[in-house]
Length: 401
Ligand code: F3S
Image (cartoon, rainbow, N blue to C red):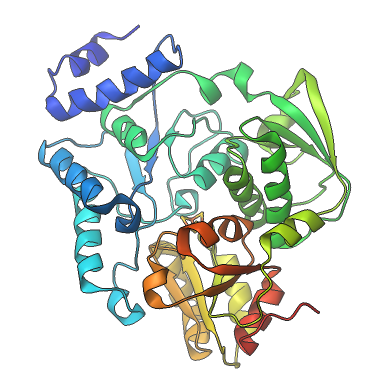
């Protein structure tokens, strides 16, 4: 059932662009049997890299923007295919840069903030507990649902944009209480320490539970970077949109978040994840830290580890513009640059056309990146701890011992 205002949007009374956006929301509502639409507080929009969108996507966005549509709620943008400022010195082609710039400008004309990050929650688009939002970008969705307790389905870039323009989404899926209860209880029986271990755990859980909700027990302590890595890999190896972690994620502190007949599984160790995600390679062309985009704490850790030393392979730390500026202010950028590393804004190894930059091998502490980059970026991967990755950056080779 639509309100009068929603009917008006659908009938074209607020312009053709708004009508098109409302048609998308209503169509999704029909597919998923939603009884009504709900207002959203914010949107986060993926589908930004020219590498993924191509000319067709670029033309669609420019055409949509030329209809004069404007976002009516806070809307942020996912990473683009390049650092929007330093693309030339990083080796991106002018043709790619021009088209990428047109895409970001089209979004800006619609009122979307050109944040170009997959961690909008670290730079101000941080929904509150219980708020309804419409986000795309699987790692941001799972973070918003699980760690912040906000409510979003796994939106596509286009449906999130439609929500930003109409301020609405269809009420189904993870917006409803009953769908936020866990289908699986996952008992973790091994030590899980650091971003790569949490990523490995997420990889294993995502493979098992696919698009269902897991309730994780056995973890006593986890910091936000570790939880960010856990969710990102779970959403990449499976299609998980929400997880609970006993006594850690907010909804578990309020009520029992488990279905009556939830299936129980145990994770005894993380070996399978490390084995599956590692290729048998030694030479490392590029080390990638910051998937999802690095927090200031992660950048600080890297800076301390490479201070006064020199990297042999390329070292890319990918982050948002805002965190980059903070790293600069704190003097971390200078330390990293002096060691030969690069802090790169607006993009990441997966959405940038790194094949064109000649990278064939990659080391990362992100299970999500290790899962996606072989197919998306045609590279062979080493996956391990931050310490292992920094050692590889300093020596140019991956050492198993
Ligand atoms: Fe973000 Fe790129 Fe990873 S968009 S989650 S850094 S694959």
